[in-house]
Amino acid sequence: MKKFQWNSISRSLVASALGLAFSAAVGLAELPKVYVLGTGGTIQSKGDTRMTRHDYRAGRYDISELVEALPELNEIARIESEQITNIGSPSMTPEIWTTIVEKIHTILREDPEAAGFVLTHGTNTLEETAFFLHLTLKTDRPVILVGAQRPATSISGDGPMNLYNAVRVAATPEARG
Image (tube, rainbow, N blue to C red; front, side, top):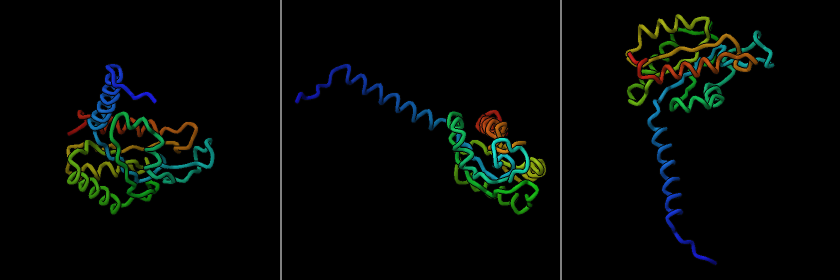
């Protein structure tokens, strides 16, 4: 059996591979960290078929499933996701609003790398939640509320693009403040 000889080509290939791996790791670490918090709504809903655009149940997807189904998010941010609640927006309450505020404040205390937040929400009461958060959150980091008009499983679902764009805004330094 012939003994492997390190030559300049072998060393160069190994160095290149290590350099690419290091660059990828550094690039990933430099991406902003965005927390995607799920509360439910149409954006997290499933219909019985891909043609279902009404008569669906809100909040059937866990936020982690929604994030996993959109791998493009990993190109613009390091994503952390957590399900706060999983309801239709008419069921939103001041108690849930308080939980959301407490969760965001906890993340801000524990993770100085948090660049921004995305909160999935049903569109029926999204405006009321946004107003409450505006009055009670103590941060200059962007908090983006995002919803959808059609279920995530619909052939014409708008949720994935809405979520992608919300993460883009939350990850953008210019959105801060």
